[in-house]
Length: 428
Ligand code: SAH
Ligand code: SF4
Image (cartoon, rainbow, N blue to C red):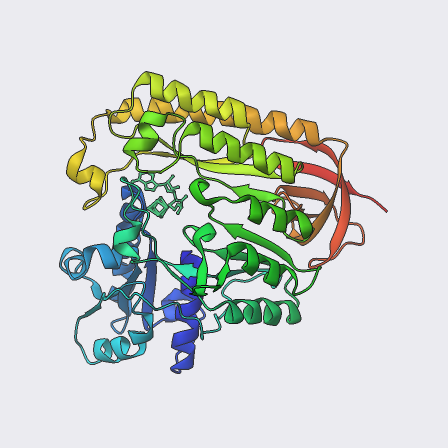
């Protein structure tokens, strides 16, 4: 999400006559786009901002600004706490950045943190930063109002709003024409995408259908799906389009109904498993990935065991695993004690990580001998002789270069694996 936002910021500032500096040493402004989801994300930003002080000592013109969720959450307080920061700009205020930079150049400090109920930056064609020219993100909606009790996003990114589907399809088409072969549609809860009024509403399944119809050679991915809204209709659309990737990120957060209720997730373990069964029914070769939180308020050993049990049942291909981090202003912070000791959170998290590592390796071992169509992305980090790409399931395959070229589709047979990567050879 932040990456996509930085590309919008890039477009707004390029449009106002600014350009990307060749290196941070030569920059007049450093803009740090930030996440506020967990405390450690914020601590990393503070560390980076303090490191920039040395650079400011050598380059007196250099001004630092903080963008994104941390700017929204802390507003002007951030400039008081980090004295070398000259401006803050929240996620709905990026159109004001050119004016902000002018003020800052005149020596002022400035904060733009108004949230909007309508801003989607629909008309802005993002500047693709650090792009491989093959895959790109398209933001389809902004904000979230699910108010999961642990989560700061509804406070930092405002109310949910969807972007005009015409502009989304046009962006996908323009990317395809420039040679891109994969787009990922982004939103906090893409299943609640909704554009239009009354009997003329475009929902997420229809949007997917339209984007997938741009060209069968354009792969389409999406994130994130909230389990409460994952519909059979969407799964049916996916089944109809081979170029919609067989990979669904379905964050579960906990395997205990008691915790899911406390988290305000609005589904039960039974509902979640029913959705997993529906995915397997419509898309038998679909990979499923998740997010999970260890040590949420009041989590007992029994709740934790229920999470491990759920992991054993679903057998995810990948999981993002986190320790609960209390966030100021959330329902949990206001009403529920953060009562699991840090060492205990770490122990539980490590147990989940170990189990998931084992499952991912076992899943990958079953892949040996299978063949996949791989979108070649580039050279493997380890060797120039090898290339890497992904299959529709979003698994990384590394294989001998042969006559393959980035940006093309090639068939690859899996010959070996680790928990994170499939190793293979070109077929034909
Ligand atoms: N909108 C997405 C998630 C966005 S945040 C969804 O609902 O699935 C990405 C992940 O960060 C969440 O899925 C959750 O696992 C994690 N997360 C959010 N708030 C957190 C917190 N306070 N502590 C630890 N992890 C958190
Ligand atoms: Fe946060 Fe829940 Fe919204 Fe995801 S759905 S961004 S976890 S409030």
